[in-house]
Amino acid sequence: MSDFMEIIVRTIFAFFLFMVIANFLGKQTLSRMTLHHFTATVTFGSITANLAFNLRNEAWQVATAMITFFCIAFSLSIITLKSRKARKWLSGKPTIIIEDGKILEENLRLLRYTLDTLNHALRQKDVFDIQEVQYAVVEPNGEISLLKYPPYRYVTKEDLNIFIKEGNHFPIELIMEKQILDKNLDNNGLTKDWLLSELTKRGLTVTSVFYAVKGTNGQLYFDVYNDRLTSPIDNETGHR
Image (cartoon, rainbow, N blue to C red):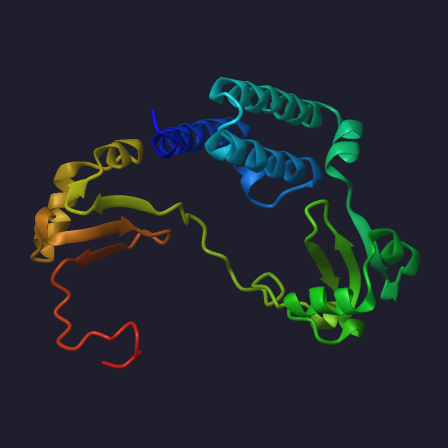
């Protein structure tokens, strides 16, 4: 096999092996990463690259290293689930940087946070006046969480004594690209006859519907293929 073809085959193998490992490690490893998630992801990336391009090493050798590291990372994930002490050591712990409106300079120093970094993080949370902040915490994944003083917090329906209607549910997808989602109907006590009846009321057929969903408030939404827009907005110009 030529080097060119070997790189292609190894790259395909590396991709699917990484996908399998990432699936076992879980979504958290790929989203908001803590310290050990970050370490695992970077190391997996390096090993995957070696598996794809480093022809001096046999594929099975690099794959063995990758699987071994997966076992380590997976074991650490199990340990962090079961042990709070291990979780603090492996994933880090939240650090308070503003307490009762006062900046904790020592904690900033430990995190290697500058005032510029702090102000940048606050602006990303739509806070431009630091005096609005009662508490600020840097989470293990590096994100900052805020608690504003009461006058600066968002008003909720509970604050206004507005009655919150019960009975909202998760949206139920009914049709997707002309296909009725029978499993969703069955799981939610709905029937195909009911759905066909609703389509008939609106003068629609299953094959004319691109997407149909029963929303959180129980209302039905249908999007059809023929939207009857005579002058759609141009994606590039933003004009009709």
